[in-house]
Length: 122
Image 1 (tube, rainbow, N blue to C red):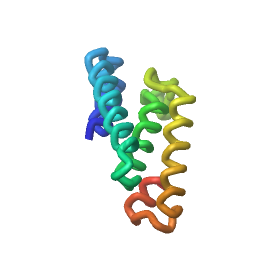
Image 2: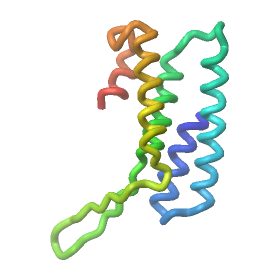
Image 3: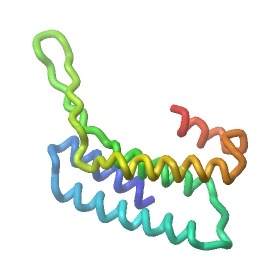
Image 4: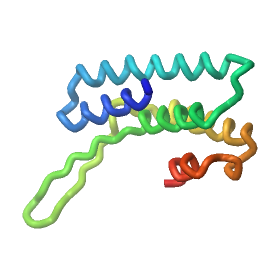
């Protein structure tokens, strides 16, 4: 839940113009989410689960978050997409690699729920 709220805080910050309050809130929530994922993965009694895979995917999405600014010029619509402030390509690759390894640990894509497959592939 922390990671979804973090993603929402970063998105809200982008929508209202780089609001530092929401950027800080997003960072705090993401840090808490990462701590919970790490605690879960360190517990030998808790096997890898789809929720942990989803968490890794959300963390990668936060890292490549882009701000989209729509504006109109005459009658044509333009979309400007500068790099997001939360973006860290190395962290993105790390989270995505972790998700990929966890999918392999569960037995591959064929063993995942339809919902998670849809989230990964869309």
